[in-house]
Structure formats: C-alpha cells, structure tokens
Length: 197
Image 1: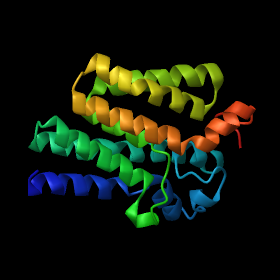
Image 2 (image 1 turned 180 degrees about the vertical axis):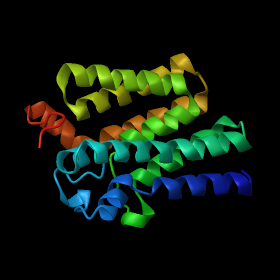
Image 3 (image 1 turned 45 degrees about the vertical axis):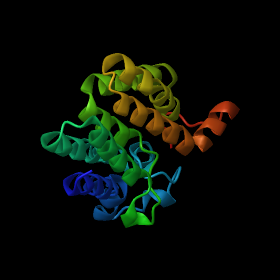
Image 4 (image 1 turned 90 degrees about the vertical axis):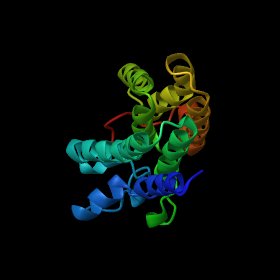
C-alpha cells in the first residue's frame, strides 16, 4: 500500500465523517437531529421534523460523500482492494464520524453512494429494492434492511470482483447491526411508517 493509497483511505473517512443532517440542521438553526425523533442523523429522521426538502438535501449529501471518495480513488487506481478500502472508509466515517464524537447515522444513503462509485448497476438494484419495499410497506427501515441484505448478492451477480463482494458483505452486516432497534420494533409491529411524525 502506497502513501497515496493511505491518503485516499484517510480522506474518504474524513469526508464520510461530515454528517449532512447535523451540518444542515445547524446552518438552518434547527435542533441537532440526534436529539429529535429517532435520534438518527439521517434523511428519514430529518423528514419527521425538518420537512421534505431538508430530508432530500440530507439524503443527497450523505450519498455524495460516499460517492466522491470512490470516484477520486478510481481516477488514481484500478486496484479493487484499494477501491473497496476507500469505500469502506467513507461508510465507516458516516457511522463513526470523528467530527461528531463518533456518533453517526445508520449508513444507508452513504452505502448507496459508495455502491454507485464501485458498480452503478449494483447501486441501482439496491435502490429499486428499497423503492419496491417502501411502496409495499411504507417502512423505511424494512426497505433499507431488505436492500442491504440483498446487496452482496447483487454485487456477486452484477460485478463479481471479490474485494467488492467482501466489502459489501461487511457493510451489510454493519447496516444490520446499526438497525438493531428498528429490527426489534419491526418484530413488535411498532416501527413508524415513512412520513409519520
């Protein structure tokens, strides 16, 4: 691993550590999303108290910060191991942001961003899965969990590069881990539906 590779990975983590939800809420004088609703600094929670426009900006911001490091890395190297490491670093930055006391979001939007950078067909398949589940059940967490569980299979079928498959599998496990409370509420039939305050 070269110094450039290390710089790419470190830069990805730092960019991933920029929480769109927290930054946007501060700029607009709104409460810290970690103190509102579900306490998650993500688009779904922001939607509950900040409205659709702010939620959309949060979603885009979290996706872009996952996408940009991977695209930059792709311009420097074609090594799938380094690209996978950069993608994971951006994702971990969102989950454990150095700028916000290592208390970040659940990582769904950032995961989509890094998947777009690695293999857009896989990201598209994951998004379509989310949309289909959301249309059927109107539950964001269930949609995200279904997409994350299927993502490694999509990477296997549509891309096939072992480092990407392994990274996506680890990312999926972390997504499931971060959604433990949601899973408990889903099993109890208590999970909130999309748009419900």
